[in-house]
Length: 382
Length: 226
Image (tube, rainbow over the protein chains, first blue to last red):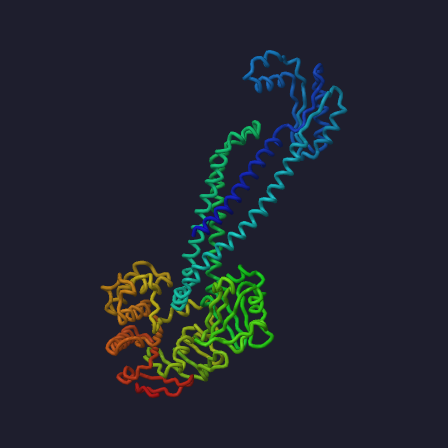
């Protein structure tokens, strides 16, 4: 339980953190994109005529690249200046409207077009200087895209690992209750009834993990608010809106619930589709073991995984060909396969791929070093 | 109701049932007898579709058992009540919960579950022990709970695999009496596997005898013969 919640919390924390950082970067990007991206300043002694202004406006608008274009007169510039420096009377006194240049603010649909627009306006009479934040926007776009890609890969990997851990933990619980499940199946229990408690267990891990992850991310944001405000230098995205944070909580919980539910469901399906958990389902010199034990082996020893997926994981053959390859691989990787016929062991020849001398009625596969039993399967006859 | 034709089941090279043919009509009570290893349990498991036959056909309630898709298996099994020799009650659930399980699988409403479970437990005279757990019951009581569980959903077919195998003679007779009451009152077809000759000989019911996987006798007069 603790392991499942811990791995779920770590994964959801990463997902939550990456999402918040990506959303923050996006907000910063929007902030910069929303500001006039290019300012064309007239000489400070020039007061442009309406015809001059209209000429520049129509020239840039005719390119079809423009989102917004606006003329800022000397008076408008002074108002902006006053607004920005209202806390500092000394600065206000030192400046008069005549000292500030009139300008034209241009926003392009694509920041990459700023340079071309800049070239276009530069040659206009009366234009003194052109400034634009091309680098900021382009770099920020690049950074946001990279962050998103890294986040998806990183979080995706963690989701996969979490999924496997949930599958293993719930799978072990399912395996422990295989006898009970088998009885319920014989009495007519459907998959939904059998799977429900395990799916709920996975969902519970998801919800607890999501709350822990979200709480941790929120605490980190609140704790580092001072540092972040300095770093963002007045870009107004902090503190994050409460509604946004609750949306993040909802998304994180949904993700946890989906991972937990699918993990729980698959753990049961793996057992139930085998019918009776780990068991020998077919033999006649050849033996196939199916069930949750196989799944464990598949996870612990991925190279032992059968070609058909998670189901066929261990095969043994009395002959020298056929289905021997899986057991042979198991043996090659430090596992030991033992066959039994009642209480009598069926001899295996380790030197030749753990072949069984004759069909065993049960097979135990264990780790040679730890002696942990990975598969303990009985035939249908027992 | 049940029609088996040349039913054969092998485990590896070992034949467990060989070309077994019989018919059982609706509402019959049939003993399935034979020595240990004669194939009684295998036949019960084939009827329950816990195993598949290697050849031959088995039709239950007009359904070819070998052709039931896995998704429809729960529906098929819900028409069958089963009593296991080793009871197979769920240890962590009390008597009431154990007996109500088949109804829960069917998605029956709570009031109906309560009334049907009470009726089944009253029939086996264990309503006063509804809150006890399996570990707190005697062998006979445990088997009666298993019978209550098997009949609670009023199945068309009741399979009892050696239901008296672990019980003393007195309790065994009581269990048989109970199964006959179920058969009479619910009109359920009952197949009871047993090797208890005394029980069989004191009844006048049909007896199907298996020996080494072959059907050797189908005696309508209730006589256990090896």
